[in-house]
Image (cartoon, rainbow, N blue to C red; front, side):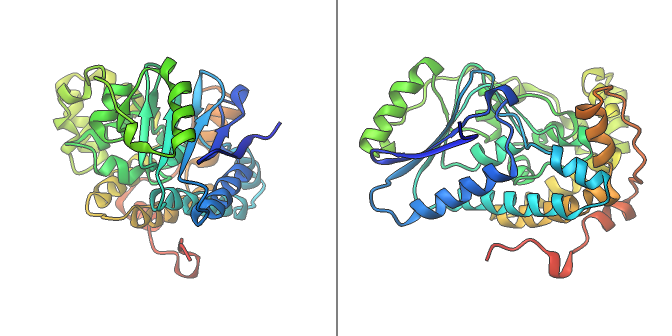
Length: 332
């Protein structure tokens, strides 16, 4: 059985994540298959729209399958990760700029690489089980796959908060933060997908009232601070232990760089600009960042006790985000 089921269904191009036991983790091969299908359907007059969904109730896609990147980086091979992120980000940009409607049905966990697929679709559907997060700081990365763009354009300081705490958004939060467009109860999805494939018409896609967003009411003024230290100090003054707990577990370098990326993305009008900036960090992550240690602690050994060693000074962030010269991400 294919990990990514790609086929035509009447007026629709269909893509279905099909690794439910792995929470539909996105592999390098799946990245390339998604991009190739988009290229194939772009000028096909029989394909009116694209539908992306997933098998299993637990996850749309809980993130990138980064095991190969970890193993290669541990062995001193940094090209494996660089090529994975290069191909993934170009696929993310292709979804964002696609000339035909893309409808993503995002149930369960939608994290990291899953946000990079569903979060840039033109029509983003969430349901009762949806939980969206950008948890990269916990593995020594930054909010990538265009995540800094989405976070940067969220209202107020929601972007900084989500980047630093990896808090999970439900459907109401996702709609408020700009990560989703429609709330539709999940039992209705099969009939809706069938209708979309039959008609090729997204105009019938109608959302329903979503749960109230707790983020809309949250006091996130502490996240206005210029640096990680300032934000932590403000949270300590507020006695906000719920936010401080995950922040104290995460990579300081990742959070400092994430702050800069989210704030830079606020000025971006095109996700490609944010992706190019993110790639500067991830291109260097296995060699100079905390990524290897973060993946070891969270995914490989699962001791949840990372020993962060990467410097997190402004100068260190400058180095991680400096232009890459001939290795810069491009979209040719």
